[in-house]
Length: 345
Image (cartoon, rainbow, N blue to C red):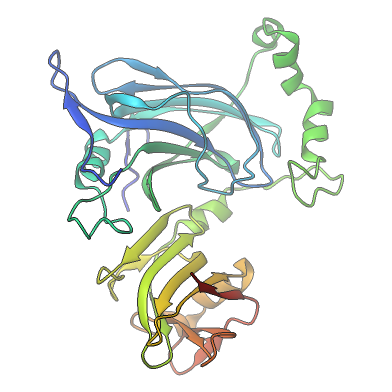
């Protein structure tokens, strides 16, 4: 998958206008800043150069990451503007006690293709209209990994990634900051943040050092697999949504189901709804154990299967669900996944 970077290694169609001065198409969007849970950051500075040559300043300040990797952050403001063609960010990783900097180009053409193409969202197929994206979401992970997603209602896709380099903030520059800004570079303050369980869930007094960025790179790996919901007779699947470990999110409705030959990231949360013959509707939410599902996906038996199914089976009275992953000659039970079935109104 290409990085999408260059330089360094309301149910309506897309809202767009054309700039008379330079013919740069404009779309309605805002930016978001995101980091993984447990690895808070402080955005020191950031800006995007837009296609018309103007500069858009990114929001700075503290980011807790409590929304999870890929969670939508809040930007400065949403509005009509050209898409970005260059990104520059500098941030402090509290877990690593290290600053990172990245300045590189972004493929505006890739983003433009997705903004203009849009996607099918729940209910939009009724009137034939499609939704489109409304956020350029920037993820900053330990080790300097930078990921750019496009986000919309019920959907988020990765369009670019790159590796930032460690950088040094000069003492002279820190000295010019006000007292509250200088405090973020104080090791005592950094350790206070990392030991705060409201910011870092499970904090135990130790300063976490995640080391290399292998974990978040591993999240980005795609596999050929497809979900298969095995329902009792007379029940019809209505909708399916998957949140992936790499921060992407996709929803499917009606007849728009995942292709069996599609390369997908590993799922973190899967939810779906169905209707039975008695017109009762049910929903299920599955949360996968990270170590268990990654272990099964990386097994040699799984790789010998052409395009395995992730099968979810329910009992007749809709109270229990079993999740299994297909391998070469057997179904592997995901014992540590958590399933919640509920009746919908």
